[in-house]
Length: 306
Image (cartoon, rainbow, N blue to C red):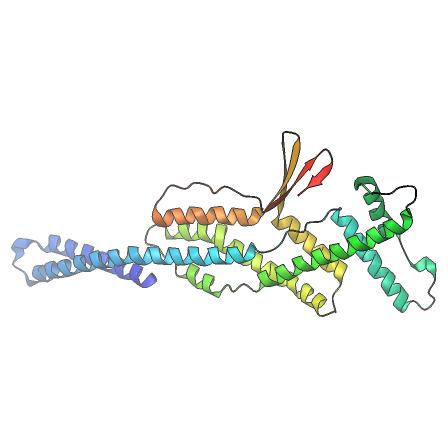
């Protein structure tokens, strides 16, 4: 595209200079330079017409290539999964940290005793279940045993949820940015070049690059965990932080039902910018895309229904 732009600009300049020279020399001068100027003007104008036509074709191709590559990467990034937990994330992570601390105390304490085993975070999480989750216990139920089994089952499920999210962030971090870099670098316009490129850079290109780079940075810790060398509570905290950054929860109440809807807000913003960029390519009116939730829960009278 840059070559077509330069050729267009050069032929335009030559056309203008030839026209000015012809006017300055004048038709009645009977000078060979007038004939040369007119001949140069004719060929330059013809070259300009051809080059400007090719420029607009290349302009569309370059913009389409950038748009397509950004769309493809965005599709891969959208594959990250929302951390869907049925209890407060901070209580869960604290329980994982407590379990890890207890494991280390058992392995490395020279004088092991029961006081080294902590249950504060575990008890807090169990208390939350008792207050917020309907438990089918009766007078014949061994409540302590049932709560212990519930806790262990829940913690295993939470760990699987975190690991599933970790795997998705690892996949997203492997997205190749080279083609997008080349596509952005090929954008070069005759008119409003700086403003168009800056808008594409700020709202699309730079945002995508920063997201991928952030995922790659966090994946270092996730890879250590997969290799058996990492710290699960630390990785769980990182997943929780990423989830808060890239997913937005909204509650909508209708007819007595409360819907908790989950949106990929950051990716939706980029998608809106891509649609605006597409409208510039085809010179159509921009209509902001409707943002669709990726998941949700419906709650009625305190009961959760998927």
